[in-house]
Length: 332
Image (cartoon, rainbow, N blue to C red; front, side, top):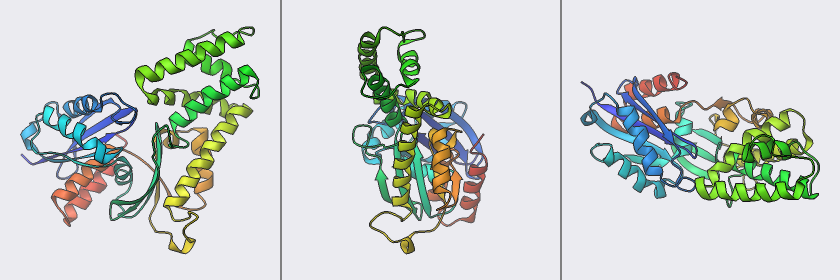
């Protein structure tokens, strides 16, 4: 029986794992909670759970290598190696940036760029399947502009601003209150009481589940924007502007670079906010589609597995074909 290779894509909300053969056939899949060390309390536990799910029914001794795509690759090495050992696997995995596996999961091209907007947000320039430049990806407190957490935080703030008069009226008052406190909690005469309840609940949820929880409010503001709420539309439009600014930096249109220096290759759009039919995705695609060839991300775990196969068989045309096969299966 041939060797197997592991690919893992650990995001802020979920972790995906695939086990593949040398030819790129998927032999197993696993999924668990998020694995971002900045926003998840125990990323190693979720990595281990995804690994074990993908390895179910397979012989761990056949695993010849693996690649983990994780945010903050240097910081993520320890939980990745611990999960690998606890899953009964020999050796250690290679840990790379999550943006790299988002790129390789969508295209077999060696060069290009990637823009991610999910729980977090980051842009990267890719050359020879290596990250050579980054923009943002600074975490929820200092950056991740246009991300789900960024949107959720601003949705909650817009609701509170509307309650105390600092902002305009918006359906986000009722929508955020329902999402955070439950149905029927936004009455007409309880503004101050509602504001206190919202503040207490939001802080409690973040303390309990980490800042990634704020991302659960992103669909609320996006839906309100699609319905025409002016405040929500402003929040989503600002998110789109910030994401497009990040993208322009990594495709070579930043303030320090000339257009003539722009590298080739596609711009991969990754993360649920850009791959699902959101209002944010519509705005971002409309702007960036004039500047680059856009490719929708598929399965980052398959992209990580493709890197593992390529590392095991460098320069082998069969590894390139396995990579293309994994991209074709990425939506499965």
